[in-house]
Structure formats: C-alpha cells, structure tokens
Image (cartoon, rainbow, N blue to C red; front, side):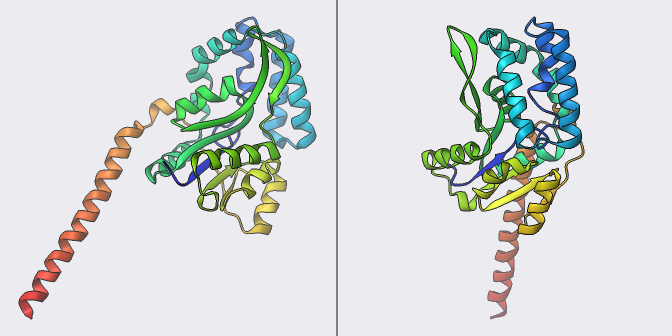
Length: 264
C-alpha cells in the first residue's frame, strides 16, 4: 500500500477544459440534449476558460447540469463517454500534468483524480490516465435513470472530507501527500495535504498561493496521449536508468574501497 498520494483536480489542471462541458456535442449526437443546450454549454465553457469559476458560478453550473441530466438513461451516458473519450479528452490533456502523474507513480504514490464532474465522465478519464482512484460527483439514479438530484457533490469542503476519508481507508500520510488544483474553490483540498501546488491558478488562488508560499505551476502544452511515448516504456527506461546509476555508484564505491585497501 502506498503511504503517500497525489491528488489532482481535473478541469484546467490535467485537461484544458471542463470535462463535463466538453461532452456536450457527443451528448447532443446521442440524443441526450438539444442544440440549444450545446450552444449554452459552449458559452459556459468559454466563460469557464476565460474567467475561471467562483462559488456562485459553480453552483449555477451544478444546478444547470443536474436539471439537464434529469431523466437521462445512465447506460447511454456511459456508452457515449466510452465511444468518444479519446476523441474528446485525449487532445486536451496537459503534457506537463501527465509527466507529473507518471513522476508520482514512479515514486510509488497513489494518484487520485478529484473532480466536481460526474463519476460517469471522471472514472473513464481516470482509467485513461492510469489513476489509482477517483473521487467525483455522484448523481442519484432510479431504475437506470438520473433523477436530477445529487448523492455526493465533490466540491469545496466535500473534496477535502473525501480525501481525508480515503486517507484513513488507504493509510495515506496526508502530511507527506500532494495536491494540485487551479481554483480557489479547492483551497480546502489543497490545505488537506502537506504539499499543495497551484496549477494554472485563477486570480484568487494565485494570491493565496503567493501569500502562503505554495509553488505555482503553469501548464501550457495540451497533447494527445497517443502521441506520447507509452508510459510503461518510459517507466521501464527510468527504472533501468536509476538501477544503472545505483549500480554504477556501488561499483565505483567498491573500486575506491579496493584501491584504499591496497594502499593500506
């Protein structure tokens, strides 16, 4: 079991857009939403990208999306996401974020995606990225359809509470764990760990990070995952390099000790 974890927000931290709004067109093509809803989602995406999302905006987005999803067939949503995942999300992933995820995995840390988007969207994205676990919003369901209610909203203090619950369950040392986010709404999540990082931060989070001495990271290179060297190959190369480095150091130490012994 990993004793430390790295908790990553998803939207504008790992991917360059809102994960839920990014699927508006496939949902339209799948018969789930109207053309008007696609246009409204596109506008919401624009506002989100340009200005970020404060508490009031997140609440409006939550109400809009939960009301929009009322009556949707759950399996249809899962099928649409599965069929379009690589076309929609793959080109939006920040290269720097993927490298950072792989860095934590190489160190033996569990990687946990923590997102306000729905689990039906976040879980496949987490699997695509090789995350160990996912914390996401859970929509209420009755007889295979969404009711429009929310069982768990992964937002604000709820994110921090879910992280603490998972840490108790998995034995994570939160003081030795990491968290990454772009939004001031995730301050509770960042404060829950010993190593918080602001990634592409909004104005409020940037100020909080500067005031608290937190590192600030700027990710600027969305890249299709399929164009990157497969992680397992690079991981094996990295492990081999480390092993060779350790082996070379050990051999060098042995030679040095041998020379000293002969001189004595």
